[in-house]
Image 1 (cartoon, one colour):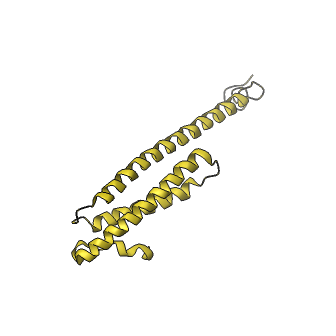
Image 2 (image 1 turned 180 degrees about the vertical axis):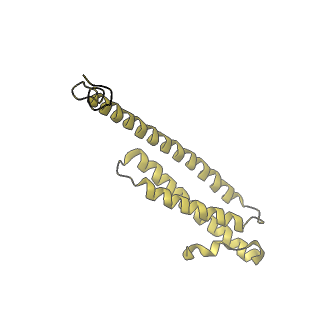
Image 3 (image 1 turned 135 degrees about the vertical axis):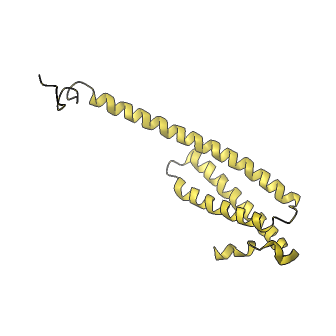
Length: 138
């Protein structure tokens, strides 16, 4: 994370440190927006999408945002940053919606598969109720 260390300035480092932190905040917000947009689109279209890797990347960037925001806590946030955060919030909401839809679809497929397996096992040919249980002697 050394390549992003310059945004983690303490508030006591003066106006130059706050200006650097604010500039880096824009970069971080932009990076998160791109990542979230790409993830949202991929969840909806790419069956081979690596959601675990994307989530790790998104988490790392959100951590960077948290650190950057802490570094500028005493600075008044310019309008462009507030607008960026509002845009990011909206994109995160759309991302959450796509993830929920994906998880619901996965749950539905798992339930269908479980039902198919249970029906195949219970077709009467070799059911567990007929064989192998203690106390079920013919």
